[in-house]
Length: 115
Length: 114
Image (cartoon, rainbow over all chains, first blue to last red; front, side):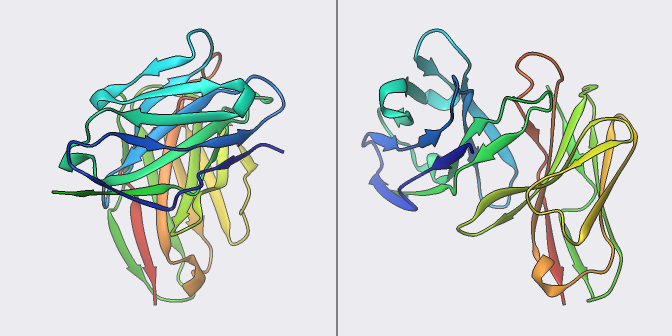
């Protein structure tokens, strides 16, 4: 069965520092991979997605993610974090085998940004 | 831009009440989803619908039902609300066909059952 693991529940970084959020997935075929961000009290906003092709994917708000098949990972990165990036981040994998577009979500990583 | 709206941002209900949560999308999406979100558990799929009047159970359907009478609207129903259904409920929609996994989310409804 497909699964997604985000090993870090909470991460704290200083403003201006670089950021990497980890995501590992389990899926038998080539996965469709997503990162979403959720600001407090809000719904989820799509940051970026990977379907195929270039394994380094650019997203909104200066985020990027790299698909590494050998490591079953899709880590999210940002070179310089801003205070407004404080939020909860979710990695998801497309369940893919049906026609219904189901996603499997990780447990989420809460990012705190120190001034 | 895709817009997914949910009927309420906050709801307070009593145990045993029948609760309706409504979701509307304006982009003619085929697929619609209901999730609940709880701390430390991420998002868990309750039900989804891939066409009008079609529905499938997700991972945690117990205690819930859904209705999709029109393509743009997907309702989640708690037949008899219980305190363990206190949660954040998120609705999402996606296109059919290729790239159907790209889901767009509403702002969420925070439900408190007393």
